[in-house]
Length: 124
Length: 132
Ligand code: HEM
Image 1 (tube, rainbow over the protein chains, first blue to last red):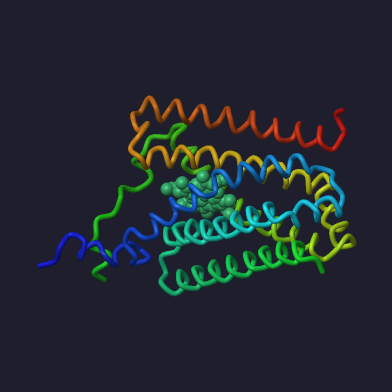
Image 2: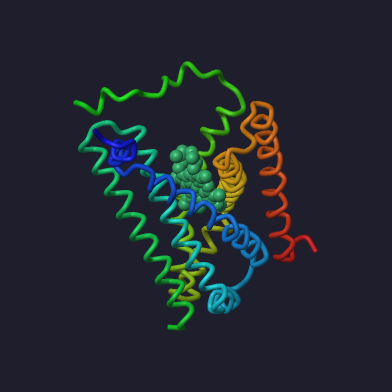
């Protein structure tokens, strides 16, 4: 005898039940205000020179919001990309390779972005 | 393979084509495009951090017609995915799921994403002093 929860646990292509779904919603909700702020800010900065953009990112409010957007964005991409790979790649080995590539890429490009934000903030 | 005995959702060809289907696919396409677009974001940030000379290279790319096209595409993808994502979250709360509502919110997302993308670009060129 297994409870319904016990049966659901470990199912889904990634064998992780509903945790993935929930994390995808959380990152989506977080991204709404962050992305709206980002679009408006970037549009206002069109044509700005290097010094102006450095000063904008060096502002702690900007730096923290940018870092939050990068973290939520790459986590969201990791989760969303996983669903896409699981939908289209049915060969078990290729699927694992694809998921690894996705995770490594998200970690690397996300870390580069965060590092750049910090370096701009703290000066060179 | 035990896993293959689980029920599967019906195959794609049983669904009728329509706006809802196109938008569902477009959500996935824009999400993927934005995934690639994160490379532009990271390049932008790294170039700023690396100094004015590197930032100049990034600007050369973005000011080139091809760079502008990439940026325009990404801006549309982001705005569409944002609006349609809000639509998804609304559905997740169990709201707006009647066929009529789905149709209407879909039309709204299409119209609003185009209007907002153009507004952002007009605003951008205005900020750059090209339209003042
Ligand atoms: C702007 C705020 C955003 C919101 C509100 C949002 C919302 C969502 C939602 C609700 C889903 C799930 C759709 C479903 O259940 O089928 C989703 C999927 C996805 N999102 Fe986003 N998203 C946003 C930004 C982004 C960004 C910046 C990226 C890329 C870095 C991205 C990439 C993806 C991908 C790859 C998927 C998977 C698509 C699929 O399964 O078909 N999203 N998004």
